[in-house]
Length: 127
Image (cartoon, rainbow, N blue to C red; front, side):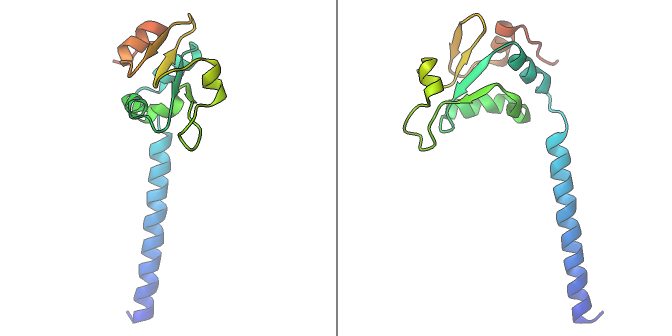
């Protein structure tokens, strides 16, 4: 093979590799995660998770759900600059993060264990 042909083959291989990785990433993100149904149930049962993007405890709470965190009934409370609270959270009198609110009006503050969320909502945790 001459130099031009080798270069062309290299580019073709690179494009195929990138396309394959993109397909795998899309497939990986769309397949159901272990806690998807649990997260959907929390939303269906009216639980609300108030948090802030800069809050490490909120990130830990989301980490408990893994990829299923995208399905949580999450409300962002922080302004984009992280210096103030959005009106929706002021109106709800959210004082700390994370805060979970339930349909009975009760709240749980801090990182709430999945079992506790299950107990509060009646949503079943997967085995």
